[in-house]
Image 1 (cartoon, rainbow, N blue to C red):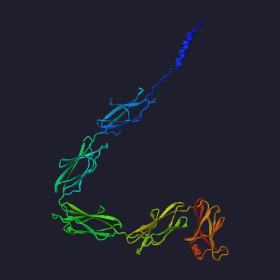
Image 2: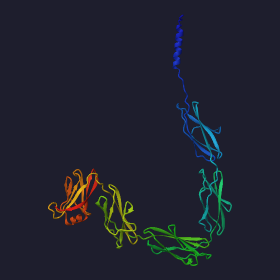
Image 3: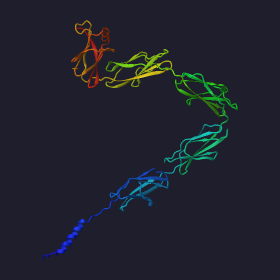
Image 4: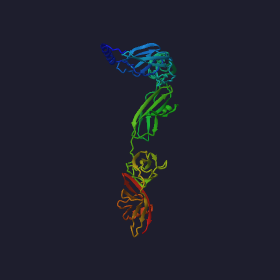
Amino acid sequence: MKKNIPLFVLVLMSVFISCADEEQVIIVPTPSDFEIGIKNILPYSVDLEWTASTASDGSTIKYDIYLGGSIIKENHTSTKYVLEGLNSKSFYLGKIIANSSNGKSKEELFEFITKEDLAPSVFEVTVGSISTTNATISWTEATLPNNEEVVYDLYLDDILIKNDITTTEFLLENLSPFKKYTIKIVAKSKTNKGTYQEITFKTLGTPPSQFPLAIEDTSPAGITVYWTTPTVEDGSFIYYQIYVDNEKVGQYTINEDSNNITDYYIRGLEEGKEYTVKIIAVASNNTSTEESITFTTRTYPSPSDFEISIKYETSDLIIVNWTPSTMEDGTQVIYFLYLNGEQAHPEYTHLGGLKYKLENFDPNTEYTVKLVAEETKFRKTTEKEFTFTSHSIHPGIDVEKATLYRMHSTYFPGQLNVKFTQNIESVDVVGFHGGVNIEIPSYILYPSAISSPKLSLSDYNEIGYLKYGYVLIKENGVTYILDFNVVIETN
């Protein structure tokens, strides 16, 4: 039996369904994942660094840091934190919780093992610059595997003189002459774990008296340093150590005659250069006195300037020419030639002329020629460089035949005619050469040939004797060399 639903019930149901459709479900976002990095692991501390965690609704993120189940830091706003007060060589497990202001959180774990607390490494101690009252104590650096800072305590005869030294050198002053001392250096870590070394030394007696130095000439070939003999109150023997610019160059052995030595000859100096000569008078009582003198050696002239040029013979052979380099006093000048930094002529030889032949060049390659002119008296030099690019070989055009017609020929007497394998009207001829030094400035161009005018007798004879030459052409900005061998004919 069908029942009718009252109207007011239908109205109430309609309102209820409408409200249900408008209701929204709100989802609160969880903080994003983040990664934890462990850095700078030391025996008693480590550095924590992590990527920032974020919330999509813009909520504020703060971090709680736990170590071994205990909270170390709450509401931390940075992404870095230093864990301190740890035990050395120990395993730790911890976590960081990112808390957003909307009540959600995200947790990440971390773990690490602290390094072992070790004593600094073994080091060496030396004593230098010993005088009657002073001594310099030096030692090599002691290190720790964890790169911690190492500091040093210095003891003199078991009395602490200076603690927490950060350098590796210390000057002891106000010591007593001729007294034996014991030095102990203790290298310490931050936790006062230490390693120590000891050394014993003795201060010196009264040093030799002053002995001013003098020189008479400043020739770079050699100079003689003079001085007066110093004296020692206790009559000790003296020997000398000689230095030039702090480099030891000589020493006299101590003996009965060494007290009478009053000069030293120094050779092999450079001209026009300032030098400081230092001479140390060392007494047999282990004391010393030093004197020094500074001077500048005389300057000698270099060979005169010169010009350098090259001339092609063939595509892979050139002649290097240069003008003479001279000395005003007539000293001989010799030459050394280098190609791309390597000596071009045999080792232990030099060049006496003004030209040299170089060959076996790669096409279209840059080369640097350097010529060094050297005078033979003091070996002063003047040098000059010349950079050139070897010519390319054309991929298609070549010389088919080069003919030098004899002077009594009916046609083309005394002319050089070069015939090519292809038409050359599309290229530019930029040079026509015969022999070594003959440039043919005027010539007649044909579609596939080039011809010189009648040559002078000297040019004719040289080309006829050498029987070679070359033509330079340029195409698309590239210069090509076309070598040829000369055939002499009569017509």
